[in-house]
Amino acid sequence: MEYRYLGRSGTKVSALCLGCMTFGRETDQTESHRILDRFLDAGGNFIDTANVYGKGASESIVGDWLAKQNRYDIVLATKVRFPMGSGVNDTGAGRKHIMHHLDESLRRLKTDHIDLYQLHCWDRGSDLEETLRTLDDLVRAGKVRYIGASNYVGWQLQRALELQRSAGWERFVSLQPQYNLLCRTTEWELVPIAEQQGLGLLPWSPLRGGWLTGKYRRGMEGPPEGTRADRDETHGGFNAWSLLDRDHTWNVLDAVGEVAAETGGTHAQVALRWLLDRPAGTAPIVGVRTEHHLEQALGALELALSAEQDEKLQQASEPELVYPYDFVFWAQDGR
Image 1 (cartoon, rainbow, N blue to C red):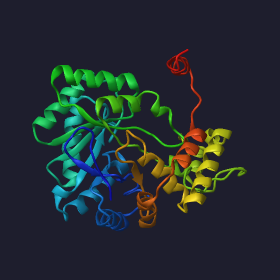
Image 2: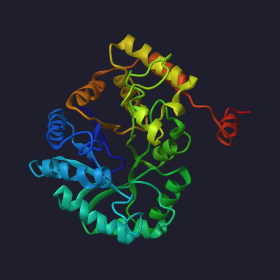
Image 3: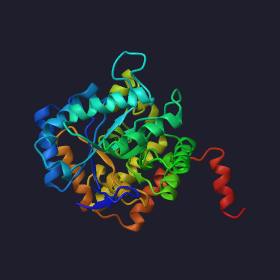
Image 4: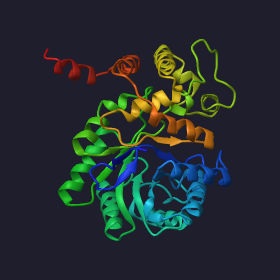
């Protein structure tokens, strides 16, 4: 297992983070604990969940497992922002909501502190200074070690960092955005901010809801039944077949398949290795439903991509620029 610093903090985390969104939903407690045990045996120490996953079920499953471990060996991350009930104040990033649900997360996780407490998404209804001061208070109270953000756009993240610096409040040490070979617009603003500000980058959905696992091939007329693309097509979601059934997607998947054949790795391992090799990357968050899926993800750590293979993936997955990014990047070429 590789270990990397979590942003500019002095804490090291495993190069793969185990995402627990499936726990209590697709994966029962027994299998979840097997997955956690295997991850720990492989040297993994970084676990990510959220209070909203299974409306607390994921945190409870992790907590039952965590109670039997050496707590200090685990870097535990969770998140807050989305509704946990129907109350009018039971959502958002206001002080009342954050403080109440932190205590609820601590109870379910059976611990007295969270190592990385993350805002799950920007909240336009809450004053940003109130949100950031609340997070600072939680760190000073010893309930939280580090704080991070997830699902922010560039100006929101930069504004938060500037407020934290000017007020002397605890800074974000990490950013958790969607980032994968089918979602590289993250590189337009968020990745440069992370690099310049020293934030650890924790990509979620590194396999784009299964699209980068090899189960989708050019020429298919629809998604396999029961897949994420199938469910999102019916119920709505950004992995829906109709949203990704386009030439750019198939060009990326073709390139991933070619590199997989050249390296002997799986499609998923190639996609994960590409993320692991990004300069700003810290730890992709791998969400797995079974122990077999975890073994496949761990295999990415043993894979090596040549410069030529990395360039093949880069070229195939390059997103089309839109204004103002096209003009700004064009101007940087000296024109």
